Image 1 (cartoon, rainbow, N blue to C red):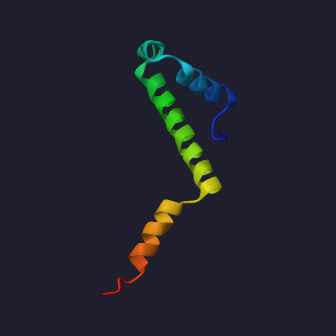
Image 2: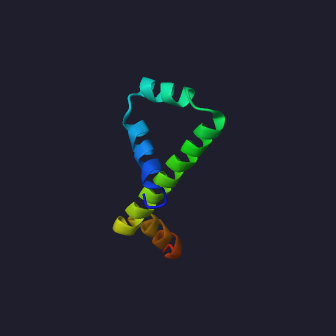
Image 3: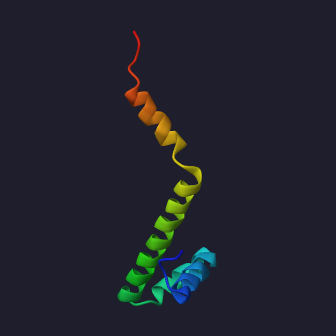
Length: 75
């Protein structure tokens, strides 16, 4: 998660490690602005994890679908 400052990344990881009720309590204690910043940081983490997964594993399922669309069907 290189798009975030260490402190922000650590806070996101901490919140995501909480039980559901603890997480809700933390979110409810935030201002709307703080919650929006947190949501943005979680989204950045999510996108980065997805990008890393695609870089490592490629897109084999999508590649199969694209190949199927490109290959003309024989009658």
